[in-house]
Length: 203
Image 1 (cartoon, rainbow, N blue to C red):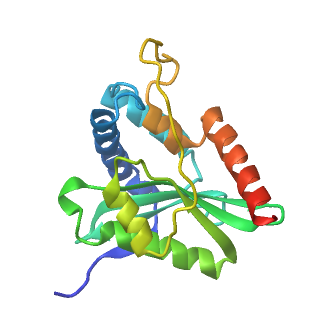
Image 2: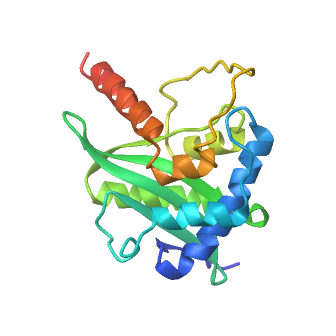
């Protein structure tokens, strides 16, 4: 069968499909890792959070620090990859992959792989030196996807949860917070990680 999947920059008209896929993904993450994700919020609230991350003009600017590619199959958005481009001293341009999500019924059909491969080709053509992605230990499918695309595991992180502590009520959706890149904890973790990586590479 002829391959009819299309990968392109997201457009404003794709936003509702991106929100739908993000809603599904967040619910799946919570069901699998309730200790790491807050309770799924009302759909309308999560939609407002996601819409705020893509203000007017976001989809019209192709050369910005954060972008989204979507995968269309039979003229329908079935997945997306959300990424951030940054410049790090002594390391050059880096793409940090924030999220890869595909509709459940379209998984295991190559959409995720095509999105990741397209991003790598895009990065190489724009002089990106390093690509970084994170995968939950409980997500072997995503781990396999990264390895198939040429990624190599470089570190392992460990967590210890205090189950007696109360979750913050400020962040109504951990997934939306991570996706949005407006979460200060995300940037603190990223800066610490990149600092460690820079030291490692200069040894």
